[in-house]
Structure formats: C-alpha cells, structure tokens
Length: 117
Image (cartoon, rainbow, N blue to C red; front, top):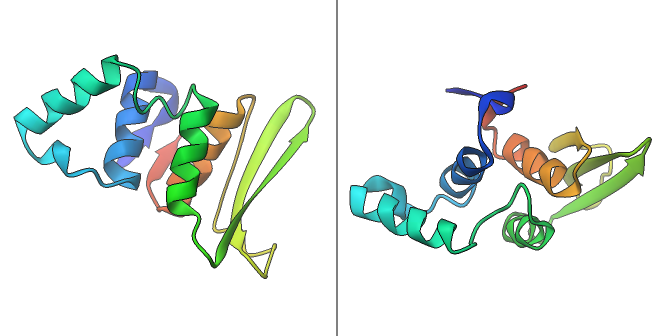
C-alpha cells in the first residue's frame, strides 16, 4: 500500500508510524484502536511534531549494527540510517524542514513503508 504523506494529518502520520514501524498490536481490534486514540489525545506518540518522541522512535529502531546520521543545510534536515561501519549504505534517508519529521520519514523508508509526497 502507498501512503500519500502530504494528504495525511499529523494524527494519521503518527498512527502510521505506531502501526507500521513499532507494530503495536492495538490496531488489530476496535477496542485497541480506541485505547490508542485515548492515549494519543493525552499527548503520547506525536512522533512527527515532537522531537523527544521522534528520538524515542529512532532508539527503538536503531540497533547495534545501525546508526542514524543527521545533516543540516539550507534550513533543511536530512536524516539517514546506515550500517554502522558503512556510512554509504543508506538504508533509509529523508529530508524535511523539521528534524522530527525527517527522522520519521527515514525510519519509514528503512522499514520499507511506501511513502509518496
């Protein structure tokens, strides 16, 4: 399935990250979806707009053999996920004016979630 990032709300983007990247099991039932929504409204899992949440997301993905590299140039952030000992491996990369969003997009690309802009 292809997701059109520019057409999604922040809530939808964050739900996509929770579902496809973290693979939270709550999305398999209606009760679980309500549980997620309640906690989301309380301020949890705002990956695309909260740098603390985005960094928490990246820590869950970046394991011993991976590293995340962040560049800043021309008022844009580039986040790239590489094999730790090969900075040219580029397993997922994204550019955005927001650091939290660039992290989220790189993680989605790393997890092979099909994003269109």
